[in-house]
Amino acid sequence: MSRVALVTAEAARTLDEDLPPLLRALDEIGVPAEPVVWDDPKVDWSAYGMAIVRSTWDYVPRLAEFIRWAERASAATRLANPVPILRWSTDKRYLRELARGGAPVVPTHWIEPSQEVSLPFDGDFVVKPAISAGAKDTSRYSPGEREAAAAHVRRLQANGRTVMIQPYLRLVDQQGETGMVFFEGEYSHAIRKGPILRPDVVYVDGLFAKEDVARRTPSDAERAVAERVLPLVPGSREGLLYARVDVAPGPEGEPVLLELELAEPSLFFAFSDGAERRLARAIAKRLR
Image (cartoon, rainbow, N blue to C red; front, side):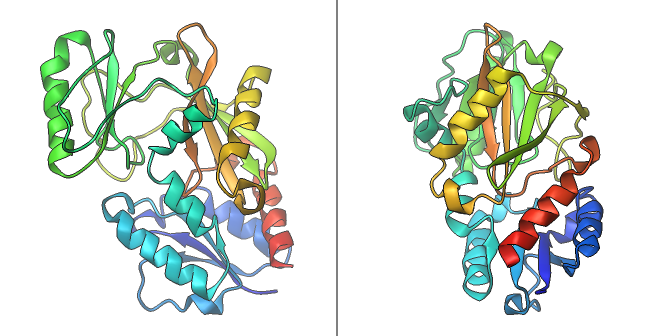
């Protein structure tokens, strides 16, 4: 069977806890696979029957370069998730499209680089860039910190970045977020993520924020949000090898979509027996 490239970043090779179990699961079913760094110029992508984007966690400040790489790799081999989905999902302005399609999305105020700074929410709120990962450049502010929040927005704008302002969902402090993982459109498992943002934390060092993760069984309402949202993704029916749908309790406890993770999500195999084998079988099926 053709070799599979599990695409990572040089800085993430030893940080991606999903890589070792997935490599073992693929080996068990006779699929040769190896980690490959996405921006290594020596890689011949045509040598692989499939390249699976896994932990390319350093792409955010180099998004245009990352998409160009994905286009080149896709011309040489089969890429999952495919280029159109990578391009669409790495800019969180997709939330506007999903909201127009009727998805229950957390309320979001958008500020483009050339626009005036406005902070429309009264309680605690979150400032973050539209292109981001791992909670980097993201912070929570209280109503008394509007001046600091506006300065944060202006710093992002000065770097040409679109900014998102969202109300902080207070029930997250008690209930956490729910991340639901799907392979080939089929539900696999879910995890609970505890609250990450603290009022006095502005930036995250490293590739991502440290997370408090545990097993979780999603509610019927949370599953319904995921199953409503995924069909709205352009090309989802044929293109989604993997997906993670992150939801949180809204003001009345109803689940709302925080984000879709379709490019390089952690899949948290350690919190679901057999999850890595389910993905390995899906990969093998695509190879055949």
